[in-house]
Length: 147
Image (cartoon, helix red, strand yellow):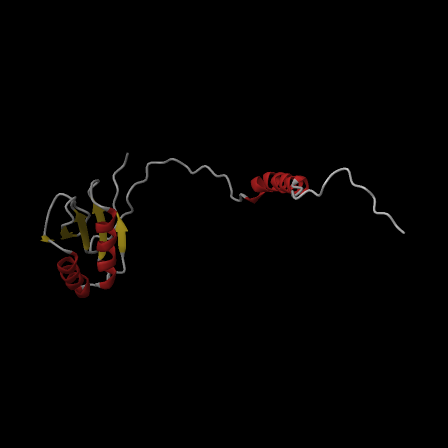
């Protein structure tokens, strides 16, 4: 008869995690080596110049639209960009859209320049641009101040 061998130790119910740790460390090294290679782009340095405004034809109509910090709008209609004068104003975007759409409907080549107060919410500026687009304005520029 065959005798069973006598075991000195009982069965272990533990999982051997050493191979998993080895695989994890290999994957970590692979990701650490490949991650810097995934960043793509071109390093450029933009020129720093003081740009001047482009000359505008004297016959062109220009609407200078300003957005106040409280979200209201006022504008000036003239032959040049003028932020100090006020031709008309509106409390909300619907009024502004209707009034400026009427100006642009008379002359589709009317250029609209938008400037906003530093404390104006971004949402008010974007809402104004969207309403101008709905009103048929196709020529829109943004005004900033030189540093």
